[in-house]
Amino acid sequence: MHSELPGEVRDRRGPGLPESILWTLGYLLAQVLAFVLFLGVFIFAAFGSWPDKPAAIIELMLEIGLDQSFVPLGVTNLLCLFLIVPAVRLRLGSQARDVLRLSWPSRTHVLLIAGSILPLSIVSEQLYRWSLMLWAWASEGSPVIQSWSQANAVDAMLRFAKSESYPILVIAIALGPAIGEELVFRALIGNGLIRRWGVRSGMLLTAIVFAGAHGFPPHALATIPIGLYLHYVYRVTGSLSAPVLVHFLNNLLVITLARYDLVERLPASPIVVACALLFVMATARQLQHRTAAPHAAADVHGRPSLLALRNPVVAAAAVVVFTATFVWTAFATL
Picture 1: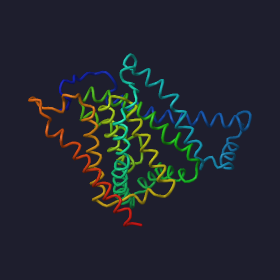
Picture 2: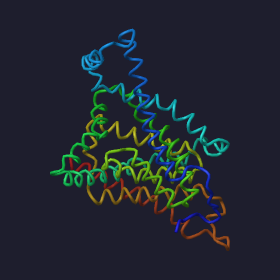
Picture 3: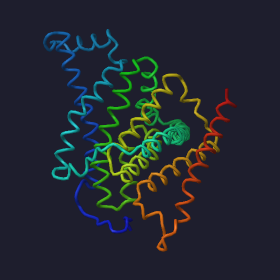
Picture 4: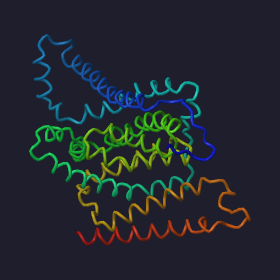
C-alpha cells in the first residue's frame, strides 16, 4: 500500500516508473551525445575536415592523451545541460513554473544544509567501502563482474581531482551534475513518482533510479542515502535550489578531499558513522521544524509541544557528539 502525506491527493501527472527509467537512460544518452558533439568539433578543428582514415583520429587522440584527459568528461557534463534543461522544461509544460522553484533557501536552511554535508558524506563513503568489499568478494572467479569494475567512475574522478585545475573541477564536476541531475531526478522524476506512488514510496523509488544512473553497483548503493536526503530537502524547503546546493556542496567536498588524498582518511569507526547518521537525521528534523508554520510547534491547548522543545536540544547534542567523535577519531589516526 502506497503512503502519502495527509491531505495530499495522488494523481497521474509527471513520469511514472517506466518513463522515469527512460528519462534516466535519456540523461546518460545526453552525455554520450554531448561527448560525440565535442569529439566531432575537436576532430574538425584538428584536421580541418573529417579525415579519410579512422586510424588518424585514434592516433591523434593517443598522441595528445585525450583518452586519459579530463577534458571530455568535464565538457560532457556541461554540454549535456543544453540538452537536458530544454527537454525537462518541455516535459513539465505548464507545470514548469510551479515545479522549478528556484528561490534561494533561507539563511537557516543554508546553515543546516551546509552543516549536514560532511556527516552525510561519511555515511555514504562508509556504505561505499562496505559495498566495495562485498563486490570484491562477489567478483572472485567471475570475469563478467570483474570487467564491470572497470566502469568505476569514482576511480577516474579521484584521479582527475589530483591533476586538473581546481576551478575547472568545481564547475564541471561539482556544479554541472548538481544542476542537471536535480532537474531530472528531483524536479521531474521525483515529482512524478511521488504523485503516483505516494511520498515515502516515491522518494525511495526516486533514490533507487538516481542510484542506478551512477552505474557501478557499489557507487550506486552509496548514493541512495544522498538521493533520499536530496529529495527530502527539496520537499521540505519547496525550492529546487536547496537540493542543488546540497548536491553541489557534496560533490565539492568529495573532489576537495580527493585532491589532497583525504578520502581514505575519513573515519570508518562504527561510532563515527552512527553519530554522523544521527547528525543528518537531526538536521532533517530541524529543516522540517524550521519550515513548519508558526502554529505547528504548539499543541491544541496552545502550549509549546514537548517534541518541538526537544528538537533544538537533540540537534545541538547531535552536533556536539558527532564533532567530538570525529575530531577524536581523526587525531587518533594521525
